[in-house]
Image (tube, rainbow, N blue to C red; front, side, top):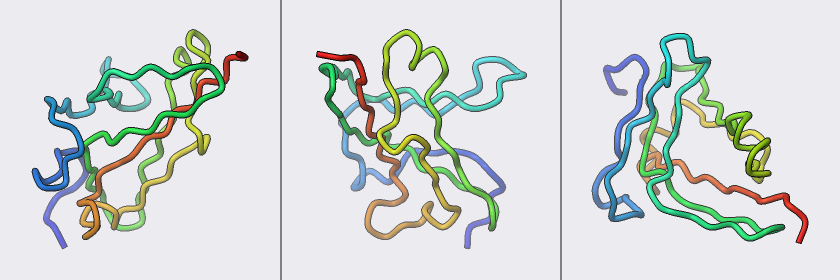
Amino acid sequence: MYNKTRGFEEVCRNQKKNDVEVKIPLKSTINSAGYDFITPVDIDIPPQSKVSFYTDIKAYMQPGETLLLFPRSSTGIKHDLELANTIAVGDCDFYENVENDGNYKVVLWNRRPN
């Protein structure tokens, strides 16, 4: 096991899916309820379509803890976007996943009508 408490870091170079600068999730204010993930790529999602991308970020946490991903409320209100699985759940042992080094994949759905 690793000797870390809780946080984010880039996935290993050989597990990166994007050739861009990765931004580690941060809180936008001291009292923010969560951390903001920034997409590493520009995306365009046509109405009634889904787009997936890897964040190139992994999260470490304590046993029994989980990472929950939710879209910001403004994302749904302003852009009609939501997570395809509604809420993404990351288990603590995903950090050292041998298949992808814990690289979180996000699937966004544009619910706007055609």
